[in-house]
Length: 232
Ligand SMILES: Nc1ncnc2c1ncn2[C@@H]1O[C@H](COP(=O)(O)OP(=O)(O)OP(=O)(O)O)[C@@H](O)[C@H]1O
Ligand SMILES: [Mg+2]
Image (cartoon, rainbow, N blue to C red; front, top):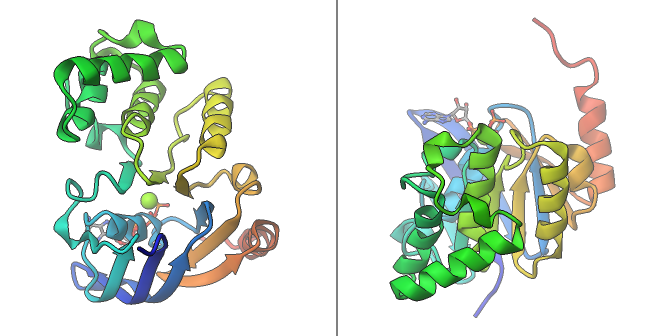
């Protein structure tokens, strides 16, 4: 079985507008960063990988599986952390949120509860177990989203700007944690410093690949393109 993510001649239109054009990519590196300006197509690209969006043309394969079956069928393969926690969190309490995916994976209630508590303990947040999700701050919600995906142990973790609301200590804790994981990681971020430690960075511009490869080189090109680029 192939363990890469492959995009072959992928085009995507959303509401009649071309959002991604002619993407041909093989993603095999363990830690891949995705950068680009607002609206360049980053979120759209990663949504193709778990079947939240379907390509208008071309084909996507994730570890030999076609994501057209949708996010639930892909959940063993792909864990997805949304840009906005409110798009992900649906349960009243933190522990229920963490247990949901595990129950879907076939664990008994007791095993799911044990695993969820273990995960909270590992992140020093066992005291959050019974907290109502709506009572958490935005950053705390973001952290719950990340834990709810990590606890399921998917083969590929996709994070869409996961740190935007997190404070510095939490950001550091989670960055270290994520970088130490054996899973493949695809992370969208405007925090270029974090991505410098990745294996590969992809830069999207208007739905096309503008840069791809060694993080230091791609990030330097992106910074150069951005300097003085904003005009009203
Ligand atoms: N729900 C939607 N329906 C139609 N078009 C959309 C939708 N969401 C995004 N788009 C369009 O798709 C294009 C790419 O958007 P996308 O959200 O993928 O960008 P992005 O790179 O993730 O931006 P950001 O940095 O702001 O998160 C934009 O032109 C946007 O207007
Ligand atoms: Mg986005």
